[in-house]
Length: 310
Ligand code: B12
Ligand code: SF4
Ligand code: SF4
Image (cartoon, rainbow, N blue to C red):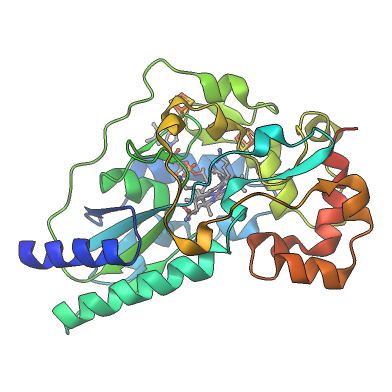
């Protein structure tokens, strides 16, 4: 195995700002594919139709990159110290992952730099990069690579940074020694199951997207009305939801990110109903131009105003 090269990849990932890195084998996930298939067949993915496609590929990395030997899993801390709690209840809350710049582009560039490093070390290798892509089970790979464990809230939790980490993957044809899968440290805790205001966590580790505030505020088209049951329990979340992470004891270990693009001094925008209703397209584009929220457009944000309590 290429231990010296593995160390070089690890060190280089640190210089790029990644918080954790792990290496996993690329065998297919058999049982998990069945769980996923059932989840989709029950309609728990709602309108995220892309999740219905390419099931065989998603759970077998070799069907995505023929001859791939290793999945390199990267986690990057995006945590900013809290101030959501002090936001008045009549002000919309944005999930932490969207406070900084849109992570898709930022992480993609870092993954490409790391892939270039791998090519430098292994000129014959083929490498593919993924971030939040529908094509790989990123959390399953993260657990297998020892980066963290999949908590009952279904998210990857790291011992060092908690769950406020994004995941990125490089599939490579290079064989690198795999790490041990991560142990589960949820124990008897049920804080996220109890804390989810819309009972979206249907069993430990499995979320019904159609009951999840994050799904309704980010993934659904702006002309679709959000069900009253979700609206009434939304706790003023207008874009995404962090409740099942806020209640998680492991997030006591969250540390401020040192990735410049994810750093914010304060969550300054006071998203009151009035403010959002009077926002013009130009102002919206200006405020959210390089942030994930721009994805739902002004129309989506205006639709989500219903989530803000009086
Ligand atoms: C679809 C999706 C969503 C959907 C569905 C969420 C979900 N939990 O499934 C919605 C829109 C609701 C969503 C919300 C959020 N998301 Co999202 N999402 C994804 C995406 C694209 C796919 C996840 C997926 O396949 N879900 C389908 C379900 C069925 O899969 P699953 O949770 O992985 O479940 C598997 C295991 O639980 C296992 N399993 C469960 N029970 C059992 C039992 C047995 C016996 C076995 C064997 C297996 C098993 O099998 C299941 C199927 O494979 C991933 C990126 C990726 N490609 O992985 C990001 C991702 C999971 N999301 C992310 C984030 C940040 C969020 C939010 C925190 C954003 C926010 N603040 O609003 C919320 C969190 C909500 C939550 N508690 O999950 C991050 C999570 C990072 C982390 N630390 O884990 C990811 C990894 C993106 C990234 N690259 O960083 N998301
Ligand atoms: S993100 Fe919010 S709504 Fe979705 S499972 Fe977590 S607490 Fe429940
Ligand atoms: S709140 Fe408790 S059960 Fe839920 S993910 Fe965190 S440790 Fe696990």
